[in-house]
Image (cartoon, rainbow, N blue to C red):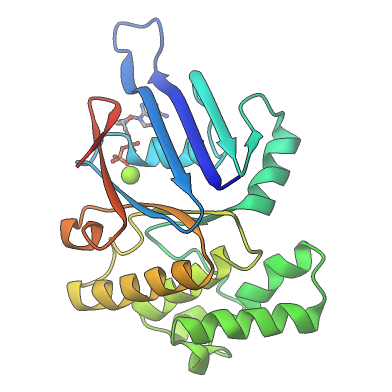
Length: 226
Ligand SMILES: Nc1ncnc2c1ncn2[C@@H]1O[C@H](COP(=O)(O)OP(=O)(O)O)[C@@H](O)[C@H]1O
Ligand SMILES: [Mg+2]
């Protein structure tokens, strides 16, 4: 079973039955396999974040089904959704959202402790991840003492701390200058490859999108090969 994310016929409409109904997703079909990095491109407002939030169990659809790592998550209650999200999904946003009072290492250790991983194992994994994205020298630094690119690379490591099946990223380099964005993107690709992840990455940057395995475009609420 290599389909880490499987979305079928997903619909998301806002303001349903009102004159100003917004039909964002109109039957999205998408499969992301283990080891596959897929770019999601579309203009602002097209529904990229909406789709990522549904895939990441942060929001629910009005129709269709979502499977994560072989499990149908469509009808799960809140408790089960949260457990599934914690165990299977890593999410990266445009802004790093690291905890300011903790070091880079601690930011990656804490989610593992919450998941029952022993301290020494959690630290070893955190250091391995930091090393794989080239920021191990910042392990003891708090976020405020790191550059934007370093903060974002630490955020990747945190998203991967608990070995998720699926990585979702919402314009992860959107906040960075072009040179930093390229470097950070390389780090993201490397760590995704090292970990054999299934990844869905929304971006405005067509050059970066072209470096991924497939590029899909949201067009009038459906996905088309770009
Ligand atoms: N909670 C909401 N209520 C009503 N409309 C929303 C809500 N969230 C998003 N939208 C609308 O859905 C559309 C898609 O938004 P979004 O998924 O954020 O697009 P993108 O990430 O591609 O910029 C936009 O028109 C947005 O205004
Ligand atoms: Mg968005």
